[in-house]
Structures are given as C-alpha cells and as structure tokens.
Amino acid sequence: MELCVAARNSSAISKIISYQILVIIIMTAGFALAKGEVGALSAVLGGAAAFIPNLYFALRVYRSAGQEARKIVRSFYAGESGKLLLTAALFFMIFQLPNIEILPLLAVYVAALSVFWFALLMR
Image 1 (cartoon, helix red, strand yellow):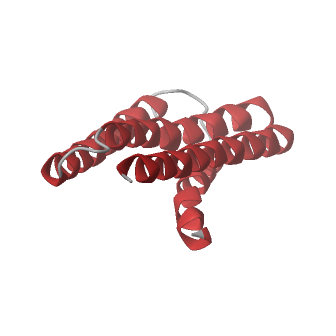
Image 2: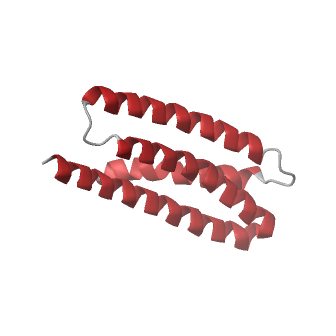
C-alpha cells in the first residue's frame, strides 16, 4: 500500500516538474521572439529561480517517503527552508548581472510557480 502511494506521489511530482519545464521553455521562447536575447536570458533566469528551489524541495520530500511521520514533517520543513534560502540566493545572484529585464524574469518566475496552483485545481 505504501509503495502505491509513494509511486502515485512520485508521478504527481514528476508531472508538476515536467509542466514547470514546459512553461519555462514556452515563455522563454515567447520572450526571445518579443524581446530578443536579453529578454530570453531574463526569462530563463526567472524560470531557474523558480525551478531549482522547487526541484530541491521535491527531492527532499521524495526521499522521506515511507518514513515515520516525524521524519517526514522534519524533512518538509527543512526542504521548505532550503527552498526559501535557495530562492533568495538565486535572486541575489541574478540581480548582480547587468541588463536583466524585470518583466520577463518575474513573469516566468510567477508562471513556473503557478504550475503548483493549477495542479491542485486539476486534482
């Protein structure tokens, strides 16, 4: 039974991560066409600022599957804390770069994060 639940959760996580990548690629292509190379770079950096911390969190939580509840909760909190720190560090590094456009950066960041909300609505 636990194996079925873990496999189903793994499948859901894989789908969300795949949809995030798809959203990032589509929006980056759109900004590349509309704003050129700088817009595309800004868009992909915004996508990375959302995707990398979410991937870290997903891997952290996935590894705790099947453990006792206390360890799962501890892993969840540690993953969320690490995700927040990674996000802050990535944005700090991104804003050190010259010629970054805010609109593509934040648009793709928000769009990649919104994949979670749409996934919840689809369930």
